[in-house]
Image (cartoon, rainbow, N blue to C red; front, side, top):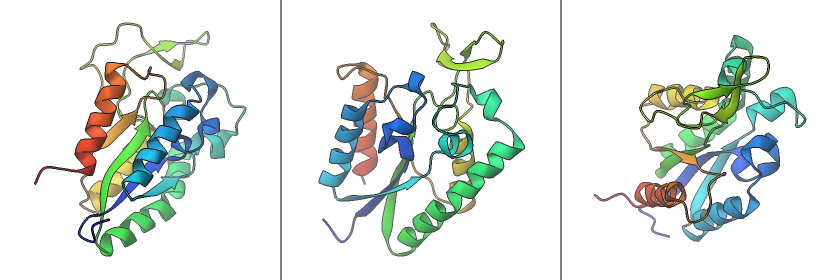
Length: 191
């Protein structure tokens, strides 16, 4: 490891522990294993925050959309959960480590990078299931926790790529290939 490029990355908890994910988002252990191996092989320190959905609603929660989580109570819960990880990020940066990226979970109402249009459930509220034919430019919304994290990093003047971990994609999908290319670019930016 080069002393000049000591790297850390910030990730959501379910990337290490897929059991935290609500079942409709998939519990893809092989992909999590691949991600952890990738980061460890590149001497990258990992900072993760606790899953806000699990800590607020438990493991047996029903799948919900972003609109159900978007309350002052849940937002306050997310801010509390980010306090220690953000202190760690600041301390590492202060000691010349480089935060290379934040990795969220694709299609998570709390930790996704891009939250587009979603199907309605039987109660006519938003579900975590995206519509079949999404409009790629339709929404600039992020998951609730991602939005709060973005505000925290911006307040400190920290700019890093935000990447969506494609837990439901197949290994040979373009989406998966793009994720790995984007992560590689964040790890080793051209100077």
